[in-house]
Length: 494
Image (cartoon, rainbow, N blue to C red; front, side, top):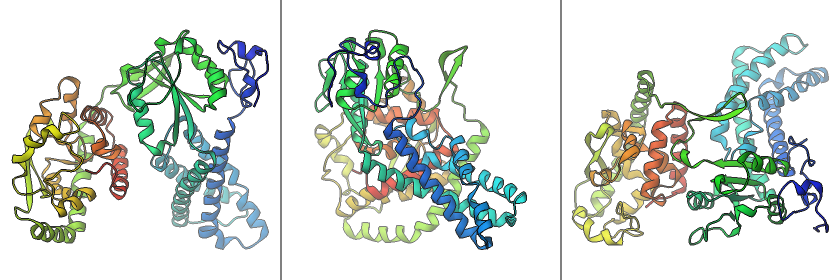
């Protein structure tokens, strides 16, 4: 790859010192704002997803409705609607999502795929009414929708994994001087599911902290075209653009002309989470920060899910809990259950119960171990000497939490919610962080799903606040499903 001696007109608009935009073959022309197509990486991902979707729909058709296809003419009429499925799935945003988001996984696809499969099945029924194909009954079409939706979700997972192996991680550069950059860099590097290679940071800071990404230059002299060409960048994250010469709009236009994806990290929205709507007032972009409301109907739905879920889990795990009880009693002396007072919704105290995982009288040793803690806000040890042999297994698998299902039935806890803290930890939270107590604490939540003990205390408070202010039924379902994956991988267990 070579650079011509003189800058091109396109490069002259993109920064100084000037780079040759011809290094970026997907880059649109000098005066184009809207690209004619997606960059090669993004286009290949979209094509892979489209192939996966068509394969799933065709397989579902042959498995469920194929027995009614008896002639080549019927087969031709059956294949004809396949492009329409692609248009339908695109209308639901199932191809642009992988380009817009860092982690567009099966959980984010699920509601759109289910809805699209049902709508597609209904449209196919109408299609059979005006074609020689035999008309399927409602039950058969529902089975077809279920098989097609399941196939789409499964093959999309496979397609994404294959493309990640082929294309490698997405290369990212952070630009700006935001104080959140070290935290953002740590999160990007610590979560492999984002499939990101953080190349470096363009910042006016002297360093990004120990073990942080390399500094690539100063934002005041940023040449985006040169950085993109030298480091083969796919995405730019703008963090604190007030430190960059020129307006945010100019920088975004430069990135778009280079075919780069752009993310913006606005510092004031640190604890807003997903409850932000992008709106505009006659072309002026504004962020809609709507008040978090959990009405009586929503609380009723959440409580119903808690009761039904806790009852089902208690019945299913009753034999396992009996076995755990025997193991705990045989492993060490002491009570079967560990009981402790926690702070619940609205600051109300309640008592939780877990299977005992420590030696009897472990609380008396807490202060002696405080100096060894990795976090000053709570006791966090790499290897806690108080934990028993059976306790280590129970903690890694989180099976010690099973007795808390009784607390869910009583209403002291929820299946999903903020982490229940002891009083000493709760006293350390002040200001907006107290909003975490607006909802009932849960067995699982954002903190448990995103890393558990690998997440510092301050981040835990922020995650709980984000959960409370962005609560939804589907959000709880997602967290429950993701909890299963976390338990299977033992991520963040202590």
